[in-house]
Image (cartoon, rainbow, N blue to C red):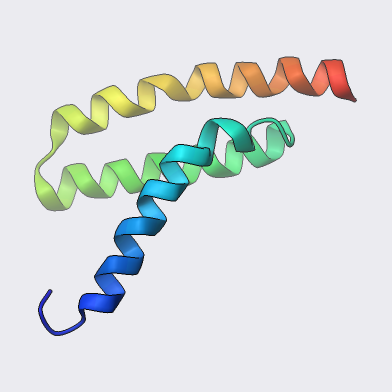
Length: 79
């Protein structure tokens, strides 16, 4: 961490921005929502594996079906 502090600062902020905007990105389309859901799932799976945050992995992806369902409703209304 001490060798490349700028890289880890960017990585930290990228994670925060991704998590913050993920529900808003579901508005674009169901395909976009699915891409971000898969990305979020892989991110949380990696956290569980590498950092031992197993409960973190179980809780956060529980919201993914609601994000996809919301994207379907918005897509039906707008398109």
